[in-house]
Length: 325
Image (cartoon, rainbow, N blue to C red; front, top):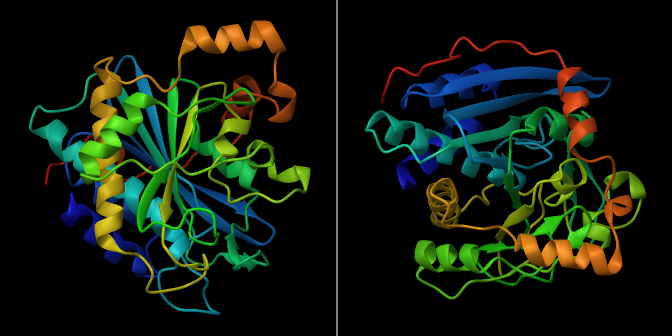
């Protein structure tokens, strides 16, 4: 999958790349339903690209979560924060290619990310972060689909001092305001993908609250959990040193390849019923003992679906079937 990662980096480095160009690039790899839509706001716009491979159930969501792919005109080049988009597009392209071979994972996989080469930055400690000119809740609502039964949220997570590791880490599962234990199945797949012991990124209660809470968050990795009832696991792209989200020349292809291969393996295992994001019986026991925690995270799946339905969609020229690699 390294080839797809490198090509995705080169694709997004071009400031002319928009949702249509990214959708066309993915569609060339194999049979997939590809669409894109532009979201406009007062401070700018971004393009959401969504790829569906396979059909039926179960349905896994893979989201590339980010503020933007570039900080132009202030700083030319692809920023560190773009890593979520790189991994998502590379995974989508590889899954589409394999579907063309007859090796599509069982069930359905929906991959979605957004492309914003002219994003903004905001102060953050210990390093500045990127922020999308379109409200984050609106972007995530466009990316999420009510059919998703579990979600991997891939995000650059280098502007911190709590995960000092080059590569990627996974978070504990988060569902309806509960931070649950890390999934043993996901940790095993991480070992397969990396050949190394698994690394778990810590998340706190404030990390799983909406950004509108006004409290500090490690980044936006867990924000999908505020808009869906499905279990969400963050895939954090990490480094040993602090790297600002707005830093350029900071997209290590081998680390991104490992994360993309992990996402693909999760898609295969989840579709085959071999990967659980959480222990459903244990979750129900926690709720029965201590009550719901949904008040921490927001409206849940139904309102996200309503927001998604209210967002106008522009069909992609690459929509429906790809032409093959």
